[in-house]
Length: 221
Ligand code: ADP
Ligand code: ADP
Ligand code: ZN
Figure 1 (cartoon, rainbow, N blue to C red):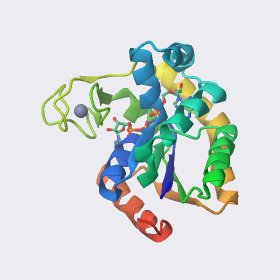
Figure 2: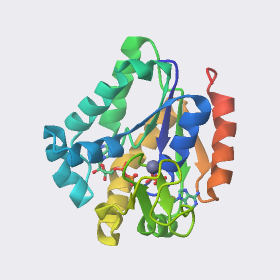
Figure 3: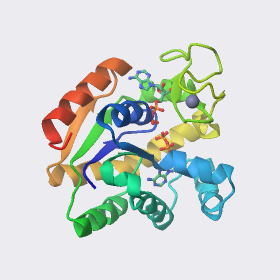
Figure 4: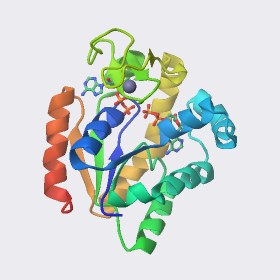
C-alpha cells in the first residue's frame, strides 16, 4: 500500500467530511468502517447482523468482526494506491492488527491525524447531521446544509438521520470513544506518526490545516 493515513476523532469530529475531500484531492481510497457496517446492516448480511446490536447501542463492534472486515477491504486491489482510514482503528488491539498486516507488506502508517473537538460541539454536530443514503456524504442542517433540502449535492440521493445520532446514544458513543479510542492516540504518538488538528474551526479551515499536515508528513502524496 502506497499511503496509509488514519483519521482519529470522536463521533462528530468531522472525520467523514474531511476524509471525503482528502480521498479526492490526494487520490486515496476512503475506507470508513461505520459506512461499511451500515451497508452490511442494510443488506442484512451475517456481518451486518453481528454488528447491529452493538451499533444500535452505540457500542463498538467486537474487534475480531471489525478487523476482519477492514483488512478484507484493504486487501482489495484498489487499496494499493493508498487509503484514508475513517473510524478505524478504534481500539489498541485494532491498531496492532493493522500494524501487523502493514508490517508484513513492508509498509506502515504514514500519519495518524487526531481531529480534536470539544464535547458540546460534538453533540450539536451529531444532532443536526444528515447523511446521503447513496454516497454517505455528510451534511449538517445548520453548519453545512445541502443546496436542496433532503437531497445530496454530490449525487442527488436522499438524506436521512442516523438512529444512533439521537442524543442518548450519541452521549454513550462519546463515552465509549473516551474510554476505548483515546488510548489509540497515545499508541500512534509513541510510534512517531501522530499529528493533531483543531477540528473545531469551520470545515474549510480544518481542511486547509489537514492539507498542511499531510504535505509535511506524507512523502508519497
Ligand atoms: P464523523 O465522521 O467524525 O462522525 P462527520 O464528518 O459526519 O463526522 O461530521 C459530523 C457532523 O458535523 C456533520 O453533520 C457535518 O456536516 C458536521 N461538520 C463536520 N465538520 C464540521 C465543522 N468543521 N464545523 C461544523 N460542522 C461540521
Ligand atoms: P461516527 O462517524 O459517528 O464516528 P461511525 O459511522 O464511524 O461513527 O461508526 C458507527 C458505529 O459503527 C459505531 O458506533 C460502532 O458501533 C461501529 N463501528 C465503526 N467503526 C468501528 C470500529 N473501528 N470498531 C468497532 N466498531 C465500529
Ligand atoms: Zn450522495
